[in-house]
Length: 217
Image (cartoon, rainbow, N blue to C red):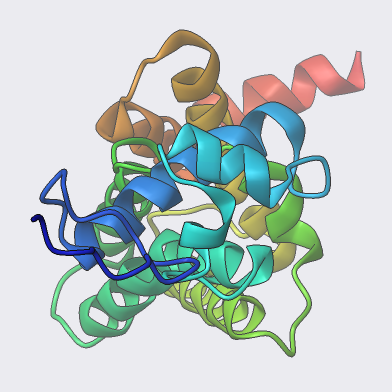
């Protein structure tokens, strides 16, 4: 006579597929990020995430306590590495404009080439609450970028410009790169970073006089 099998604990993840817990978390984050992009965070339900990840809804709770915990994991992935890189590159030797370009390449790559769809952050990032961990990292990244802009102006590589206006230009380039990846599946961190740096770069005096003349006409 076959032995009776013990009842399955509610919410226990399936092991038949041989998926490790960390890999299942990864699959859940992939599914959630795509749904957040398609329906928004508020418009996405946990049962949708579970179904997209190949799980029953109770099983999802084995990996994440709620939808907000899933969001926080995605937010940590979104800027944690770039913030750390910014701190490191500020300590290195070299021209600030070159450091800013390297930081932008790193940041844009993390937003457009990773395993998760982060386009939903396009609307979330500017409104990030400063008291959240994501908000603090976002503000730290912004301060690093403004510091590099100020240094590049002092070194003569950028025209004098309001640092906050320049920051918006920089993040505008990041958003453009994220839109390009989301809608056209084009990931071009180097090209996007070059575009931003060229927009900030000091123009030759002759070109500046020509533009001033055109503006006055």
